Amino acid sequence: MRQGSKLARLQQAGTVIIAAAGLWWCAAHWRDSRAAALAGLIVIWFGYALVLALEFIVLWAVGRRDPAPRPGAIELVRAWVAECWLNALVFAWRQPFRWRAIPDFLPSSAAQPSRRGVVLIHGFVCNRGFWLPWLQELRMRGIPFAAINLEPVFGSIDEYVPIIEDAVERVTRATGVAPVLVCHSMGGVAARAWLRVAGDEHRVQHVITIGAPHHGTWFGRFSHAVNGRQMSLGGQWVRALTAALPRSGNTRFTCWYSNCDNMVFPVSSATLEGADNRLVRGAAHVELAFEPQVMAESLALVTAS
Image 1 (cartoon, helix red, strand yellow):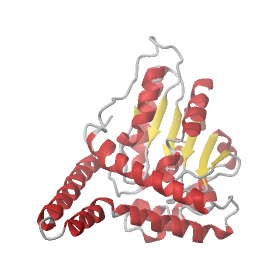
Image 2 (cartoon, rainbow, N blue to C red; image 1 turned 90 degrees about the vertical axis):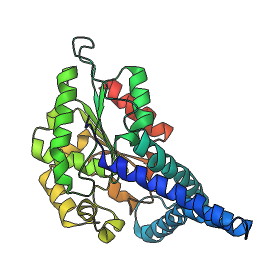
Image 3 (cartoon, rainbow, N blue to C red; image 1 turned 180 degrees about the horizontal axis):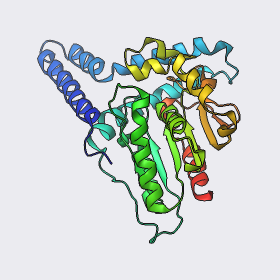
Image 4 (tube, rainbow, N blue to C red; image 1 turned 180 degrees about the vertical axis):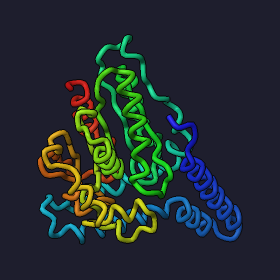
């Protein structure tokens, strides 16, 4: 596990600044107008919910020609509410302050012979704190794991290959068998970038991707970050990645996707030809990683392999 996380420090600062700004506004305007004070506090603390709402509107508009099932209004509203809560929990608590709460668990293969391990690879603007519920479940079951931090945060996805390589080596060395990769969002294409360099597909038992932009995402065109632009829908980087990997290798992939994914859309871009593509209706982008069905069936793949 990397000893530091620049993203955690950025998100710690952001959380503290937003919290302080909201309290300052409320205190400064309380005597003049309690309504204005509370309204300003709500806008400062929960304004991100409006941005998320816009993402769901764009998802609905862009997905008209996508072959995946279209979401209904109730599905979209429910997904928006869930994503508002999870964004606050993940980006203002787990990642900034709890990313080191559960360290990697890598007992020696002598202690647990041939017990298959897991490498967890997070997505864009995330760190290993994203996976806390997964880490708790893996540790409770005694399944070896390593959860990594992909940095530089806004660098090229190709720069993450050595980080993934190190984690795969550590888990393989500890268990004696090839690991399963569990990847959310950008982590899915980062895993495929690692496979392109690693060459030997047998170094990994299975790859589980959750809301991964395998063919890019509509939002990628607006990103100013290198890794964000690489995930542009149908862009040069994702096309080169697809061309470099044989389609036969996709049989090692299970790809979870949702018709309410507010970050990766058109949502069928999260699927791969020849893979085990599994649709979950009504789950937003972050929410999808913590859906009980996704966690249960993914962990079943780990323990059965």
